[in-house]
Structures are given as C-alpha cells and as structure tokens.
Image (cartoon, rainbow, N blue to C red; front, top):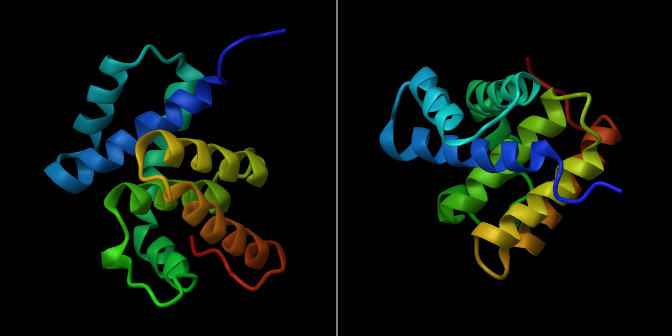
Length: 146
C-alpha cells in the first residue's frame, strides 16, 4: 500500500502559493509558474495540472469570487482571510473547471490545506462554503461561465 500523499496534494499547495504570489507581488503568471517548478520536483503530468489549476483560478476569478460571495452569510469577501480566499478560489476553480477530479476530493483537499495553513476556524468555514457551492452546482443552480 502506498504511503504519503497523492502528487496533487503538493500541487494544490503549490497553486495556493502561486496564487499568493500573484496576489501579493503582482508577478507575471509565467514567472510565478517557473518559480513554483523550481521549488517542487513535479513530473510533467503534475506540472500540467498545476498550470491548469493556477491559470483557471486566475482566469475565472471574477466569476469564482461572485459565486463564493453568494454563500458568505453576513460577511464580505474583503473580510475573509487572504489564505481562505485563495483556498476557496483554487478549490472552486477545481470544482468548476477540472472535471477529472472528483468534487469530494477537491473539498477534502481544501479542508486539509486550510487546516495546515490557515486559522483553526478556517477548515469548517471552507468546508461549509464549498459544500454549498457543490450542492448548487450539482443541482444546476449555478451555471459555469467559460
């Protein structure tokens, strides 16, 4: 039985770091990805996944944030902790635009990343938002924008 995490676990952490870099440093997308690839020893398939998830997280940010905001009860997006914003942005992009990853895997990974990198309340918060988004997506209440 294999030990350790799936390569996509580290890939998601790398994407979160890339999104942080894009947000804080306003760096060029290609430079950010090159830096991530230097930092991690990803195979080509995982590099493609990182690039795809990072690109879709940025390209569809407006739609993603608008979608997440619908589920923030009595809260504003700007008041959500930055790391929680990035985790939610990445996971929502994966739910909508990376069809080969099961939604339950996406949500579970986002919860784990929140536990590792954010506040003690973040994992429950991330779980609640993503679960609501997934339920609406599954019932066709949300239409994906390309």
